[in-house]
Length: 268
Length: 265
Image (cartoon, rainbow over all chains, first blue to last red; front, side):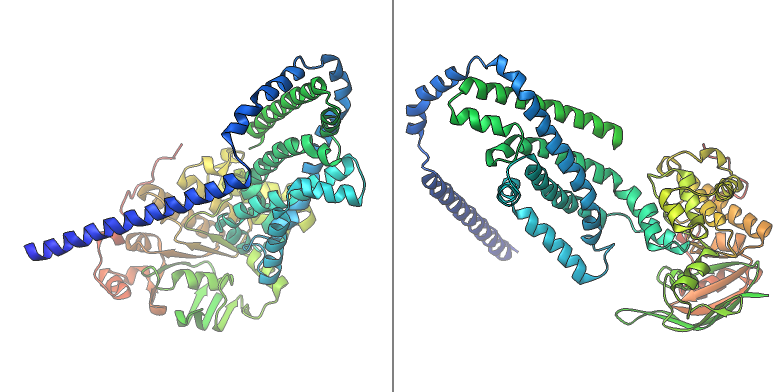
């Protein structure tokens, strides 16, 4: 029927135009958000061009790095690694009960489950540097505060990721262990743990990689590590020392990432 | 001697779904019973009320003369330890080794602290290994479960049940995920174990040819009601059509070899 066909074609055309208008509207809104943000941060190409010479002169002051200074960086570098290792380790331990509580297939009690989930989400919104700053204020300057900050962060992040994997495990093995008369602990040990161990290991290593990066800047709030001499060097305009710190930090992060990847291949 | 008695057992699932309607039946020790019916007829529910993975809404279930519907948690676990269960999807822990999956059958016989440390007594390890030998996959003990073929995985499932040294074995559609030759091999294993150890065996099947070939006694369920109960020799196509409430099609047959299939790699 030509009449019906024509109506149909008009309808298709109308839907097409409405669709286009919607997309255009969305683009305009996004553009506004960008412009608004750019004004907020004082974005200016002119500024970049104007400041380019002083930026290059700063770079020039950084080169060459002060090689002799590297010997004095060994201690804070080691401390950086120690903060990340211990923080990640405690986090990976403390995360276990939280993970179990925050998985609805393990924790049947709705209130406990939502409490654990809520706790996790609240603690996750706070950045590590903020934890570090608060702990430095409360406990005092130094690596211990930094390690505690990393512990808190690791606990909630690993729990968040692992509990989601845990909620997706297959129920079959659990049912089988229930059928053999196993108790809850045995069900966790023999049906749950083997299923989530790869995810848990992988997320723990992933968080450790993040923690190495974070512990390099913890010093900016006085929480120990390589960030402490960096802060000092910048404040004292010792740019050749600063560039040496940046260089060793770069090497450290690369090395840890490499080691972590290798470890993951072995473990997972 | 009766090992299992159902007295007016009903199961109502949330949402008022009647899965089982006043089922009464008696099973003697050492019997090999095949339960047939369409999917949704209540076969799985019936089987799971025996070890109370599904709680009966009303009625009495007796094992060895003892009402199991009133057991407390501890007694329930003890009772479950005596009942092996085999599943359609094997329900193995894929990443664990075969022997570990079979040792799971010993969990309720070993103190919890030992199982937490993974330290099973030698006696239990021997039971697990000999269970694997019984289903002819002893050499696979240290292989990861997911590296086995479907038929081998199901035999690990059988070994896990055997490791419990059970009085009763429940098999819920044990061959539904297997090909025809493997299906026959697994049914033969179940039948052989039933004969050799005199373990009462209940098998859910929806393939009527397998039911006729391996069942001694056939129980038919339709819409949660017991509609047939008799020796397999009395069962013909007409009976199956009545149980299924429709004519029999090729999909109701597993087919496949009658001769013993070759061992799979």
